[in-house]
Amino acid sequence: MKDAELYGRLLGLETPWYVTQVTLDVKGERVDVYLEHDDSLLWPCPVCQKMLPVYDHKEERLWRHLDTMQFQTWVHARPPRVECPDHGVRQVGVSWAEAGSRFTKFFERFAIDVSQETDTKGASKILKLSWDEAWGIQERAVTRGLARKPPLVLRLIGVDEKSIGHGHQYATLVYNLEKGTVEWIGEERKKETLDSFFQTLTLKQRVNIEAVGMDMWDPFIASTLENVPEAIDKLVFDRFHIMKHANEGVDKVRKSENRELWKEGDPTLKGSKYLWLYRQENLPEKHQDRFGMLQALHLKTGRAYALKEALGDLWNYQSPGWARKYLDRWYFWATHSRLKSMVEVARMVKCHMTGVLNFFTHRITNAVAEGLNSKIATIQKMAYGFRNKTHFKTAVLFRCGGLDLYPTTHPIPG
Ligand SMILES: [Zn+2]
Image 1: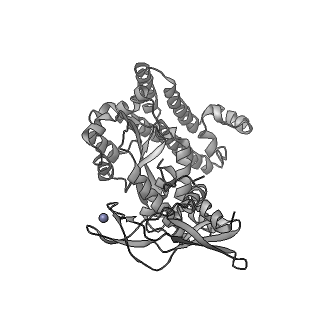
Image 2: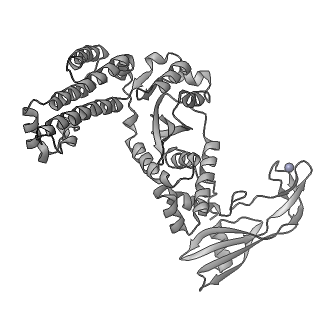
Image 3: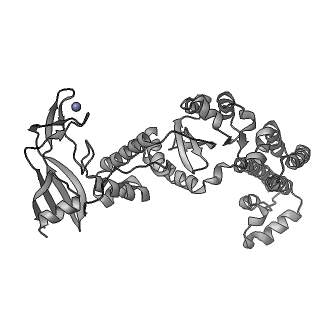
């Protein structure tokens, strides 16, 4: 096989295009592939597909292709222009690249795969692209994916807030809990933010939502109650968020008790912060002796811990009725504990009782997509280098959007 034919096959070229020349620059580690097309053919207008004769040729264009071994490989061609009676003078499309792209489709596919596995800086290094070029491929992939996305069928969704970068900037994320993907991202974490998500849905789509998982965050609650029919039965306060509040309560008790003990020169609680935050069954063995000793001292922190553990047992219930009875007893116990921050946790749970108990009907949590959360955490770290919120949004949708990102390539003719 001659090199021209070989490259024609590798590029998946079809008539009328063929390779005329392949040059190798060993010093520059570069392969250049030159394409030409047959004359006297009709070409489709890129808008209406009407077949038209060649109008003229613009200057040569260049596309970066997959490397040949270690050699960067570039495709050269001069796509013709046609003059359509309806759409004027237009450049015809080429099979190996998308309109406007400086990369072949095969290269873009590969670049997407690489970018999924690393951050933009890493991808640009591996692919020998500038940061902007590597980022541009991701942006185009997301645009492509969103344009192809089929109409939404959302049954179980989760709403969450994430901070971006250094400042106190937030984004609101809507998860598709069934698919484990990020469905939508909005700037800020206000009621209006979530409203604008619901406004992208038809009434039928909003009726079809069966459950919405979230933290006890008033703006999100208000928006859901306003936009989702029968939301009162659909709101589910995320159990992991609830336990996070309980842990924060325990930690406040520990801090203030530690301060009091220190005044008397007592270091009992020193360095014990994380011991109280484990669930009992998860406490590493190496800490068990010390923790047993601490528990035996009947500290305030120990009582706060017991309340937190008891709240954690709530999720073991199967029936909403029994869960409710248990929660009422827990509330009584917590509000009589004389531990201010645990009383506050109990009041917050009580205020949001319906949504807490809805868990026992819908059994959803925002942590279902555990992989998703760790991916987003990685993007949040990358976000320190992001220039704006749009970058965060694109990065999340690129990695967590479940989108069909690749340009369409045709099988290489055999
Ligand atoms: Zn046309």
